[in-house]
Structures are given as C-alpha cells and as structure tokens.
Length: 219
Image (cartoon, rainbow, N blue to C red):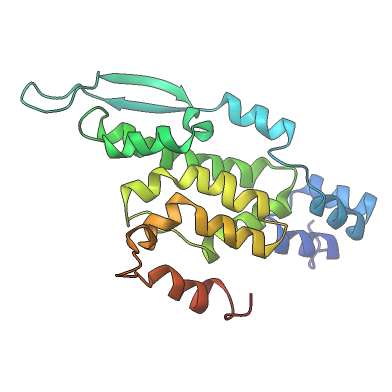
C-alpha cells in the first residue's frame, strides 16, 4: 500500500522536476537533498552521455510527395524514418530551409525542425539526469517566450535559440542569458527588432525587456 503522505524527498523532487521516479526518490534518500541540489546545479554543459545516446537513436517519420508538375517546387518525394538531424543544424541551414519552403523544400520539411525540437524537449524532460536544468529550461522558454505561430523564420531559429541562448544559461547568470536572448535571430524576428532603424525604431522588444523579461531598467 502506498503511503498516505508523500515523503519530503518525493514532494521536493516533484516541485523541481517533471515528476519524481522511485529511483530518483531512492537516490535522494541515499545522498541527501542538499547533495542532490548541489549535483544538479553543477550539471556539465550539454546532455549527459546516457541522454545524448538516447536522443541519437530516436527517429521520426517524415513523408511528403513530390510537387505537382505545375508547381514551382523542386523537392523530391520523401518517406522515411529519420533521425533528429536538425537538432545540431546551424542557423544558416535552418534559415535557408524556412526561407525556401515551398520552392527548394517541401513545407513539411520546413516544419520538421520545430517538430524535432519538441520531440527532444519531451525526451529530455523524461530521461535527463539533470532534471533541475530541464525544469529551468522550460521556465525560461516560457518567460522569454517565442510563439510558434508568429513566423516560420522565427521557428526556424528556435533550435539554436534553445541550444545557445537558453540551455547554457538556464542555471547561470541572468544578465548573460538576456544578452544571448537579445542577440538570437529567433527573438529578433519574433519581436520585430530586426525591423528597427535609427530613424524609425521598433519598440516591441525594448518594451518587452522592461515590462516582462525584466523587472525594470536597472538590470
């Protein structure tokens, strides 16, 4: 019979992870809560080896037909179980994919990076050893949010935004994260800062910095 009240360890884990597993509870009971927190805060860069191996083995189905003869599209028909190859793609590759969607690339192909990003998010939330980092990555993605319906170009840059602006700073310095956020192509497009000019400034990003992303001008 399950206990009527969860233990301290289970309650604590449930608040800073995506759900305490029995093995997690047993581990915390063995090393103690302070030691577990210290271990989580000292997470090394990147995915832990077990998680990286798990991500590397995953595939997702992708299928689309060749364009009609009267279409401007030039892509080939595709039907395969493909690895999550876009997770390591650079911004230039992803930008080109979004920019030439419907011509050199099928729209289904252009949507694939976002789908891989979401799949990797769920896998990390489930299997990561450093659960506190994943929990905080989720928090910062919600705080420094980029809406997926806003722009295909912003979506195309979401993988490097996660990889370079959010994840490395999730447990670190907020000032450094904010600067990485300001420089990211995804956020520049999402809040229209790429349209800002000295003679015609766009205030969307600046306003969000002061109203939502921070607590005021003294950052």
